[in-house]
Image (cartoon, rainbow, N blue to C red):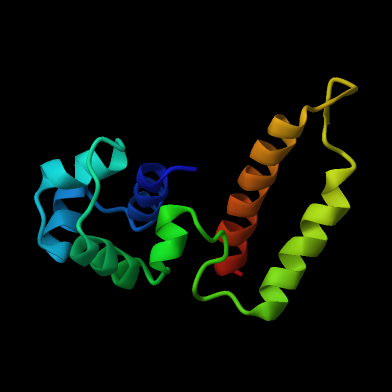
Length: 120
């Protein structure tokens, strides 16, 4: 998942427009659009403002860490268990997935896990 897609997902989860987010972090709607489309990179100041606003780490926004800032060690262990329990079922129409497909599926499962877990 790219920085832009993470940002778009976080913004949409708060039901806000690009313009609203831009006003909050003091950048234009065009800048937010560029970030979300991965055609523009935020300044360090904008990146920090986004992380603070969404209560995530800058590493999470940049895709360097899949674990949200609000998660604790038990949450991370629960995710590891969830992925391990479901790893064996990584087939499609009875055929094993490639390593690349498995990695993409793990990323998607991780995102779904954190999204659902936060709302528990």
